[in-house]
Length: 67
Image (cartoon, rainbow, N blue to C red; front, side):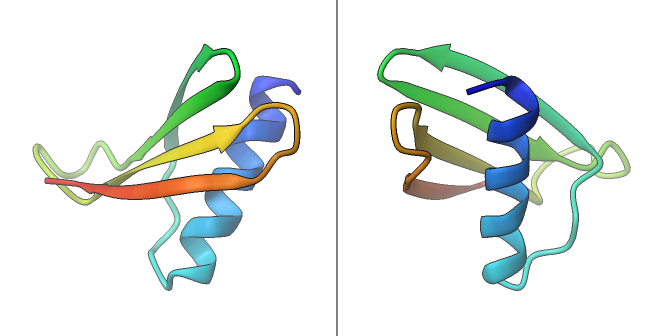
């Protein structure tokens, strides 16, 4: 799974949760999971989401709001 795929999955989950779109995304892959941090640079702190994704299936394992 590419970084672009992981970011797309994370943004889709954010949209399902009714969260605004996040223009910035950072991906860190640690098999068998990937962490995608979605954020908006307009906010100095908070407002982002950390989405943990299973890299084998693409399933979202958990979503944690970042404060």
